[in-house]
Length: 307
Length: 256
Image 1: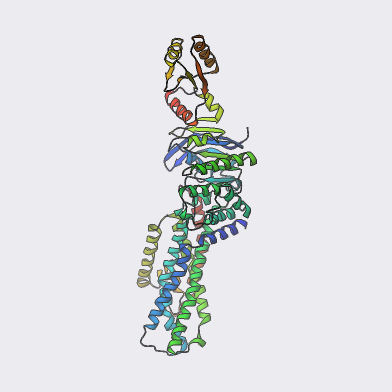
Image 2: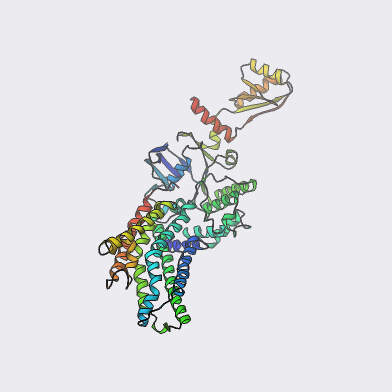
């Protein structure tokens, strides 16, 4: 597979404090990589290292196959970024902020107009940034990061402060650039439900700076037990039947749940219920949300049961 | 060359409606007001010849400008220019661009120098205008004897002498975010300058960076001294120090 970002046992932090421990990231080309972890896990530190803003204590970084720091600053021509809060000149307008970055990146005038349109900022691009709301500032920060359609975009908490419309615009920009131009995104966020809508790949870190999981969204789903949701006309009797045949059944308000279910389990449960005259309304394996998977992975690793 | 021009033109955009630009205008305007107050507050004028009268009438403004305003202006301009980047945590964005970091710092120094230069021009023009206005009101007829060449040479020499201060203060202001550290160092250095000039004018007062600008005055602190040497020293020291400062600031990790 062709990786845009490759790190090998990346270790480092701030001064004597080591935040990252042997991080080996593999971010594939044209993927949207959701970079997850609790506060203090080292996601921002890793992104800073990818941009050459921090030097690792040990380990190697390759961007587009080129080793850092040798490839700096030239390789940054292909990279856009938003790290934590957007860096904006408050006394200037949004358009002037974009103009500064457009000139520094050596882009065409139309590139600035294009991102203003894509991020739906036409109404306020001419206003001073000091008058912007948090969501407007975040949009401008995203616009700066994707200005000139870079090949790789690193976004650290890009969805902070975005309203529903902003989130939808953000998703459409990401997916549009990925689809049309093969842009690779690395997105660190705590808004897992939003990230779940766009991420093709996931990396999960724990609070100690270790990478617990890395792979596609589908792989992550198969690595943790899935839930079989059952709705029947006589839930108590159904629970007794299933429990007596060896299943661990959890009764929720409207349905029964069997953890760690497979297709085989589904077939067997259906057979047992029908043979005992129970009316089945709903029987399906529910795909876990990214939030559930994140909790599952970080919890399972602590308990030592994660495969 | 493209990146240099991009940096220069983007710095020019940053100056719009900014504190550094306002400061560059406000400093000479303030001194112009002080100069007018001082001139029109004079009760006696002892003209020996037009040249001596010009020197007499200009001396207050020039001593204030070169001795006090210039070192303070350079320090504040550097703090404001660096503060524009510190306050928005812009260094991380600038250093994540495909531009050599030393160039980013060097252009910052250049803009500090340009703003100080603009203030120098504004001061020179307003100080001449102040004396000419005074001359017209009092009927002194000094227009014909305006010391254009001496004024031009003094401005050029003083500006050249300033470059070591421009580099030092940009270095300090980028290195230490906020006002207290760079401003504290600037005030302490200016105070030491005053002490050195009074205690040992012939030795340290000559080559001390914060007293270099005032040392280029023809009728300055000492009579008949070489006014070119401090200018060349300040300019050369600035040129030699600038690459080192740019390298040092560029190699630092950016946590903010």
